[in-house]
Structure formats: structure tokens, C-alpha cells
Image 1 (tube, rainbow, N blue to C red):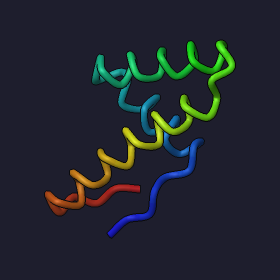
Image 2: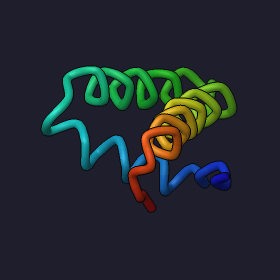
Image 3: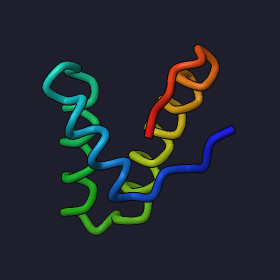
Length: 66
């Protein structure tokens, strides 16, 4: 079982993966667009949910992360 990532950790993970994955790059772009529109809470929740799901998949496959 893993803990949900904090916002900065989620952003860092997406930034690291964005060079390899277009969806991560798109999610980060959407995050910054939402922040600029004043939707910080929903933007933060979105990226944390994405990385939390990613961690869950890694846990299911038995792959270390963090």
C-alpha cells in the first residue's frame, strides 16, 4: 500500500515522465492552464490523482517507486 503523493511530488513525477510520455506532458499543460484560471484546487487534485493511480499500477505489478 502506498501513500498518496503530495502535490510537489506529483508534479515532479509528471515532469520526469513527460519527456517519455505525451500524456504526462499534456496533463502538466492542463494543470498549468487550470492554475492560471484560478482553479488551483482542481488542478492539484487532478495531478495527485493521476500519480496516485500510476503508483497503484506500479504496486499491482510489484514495481518499486518513490
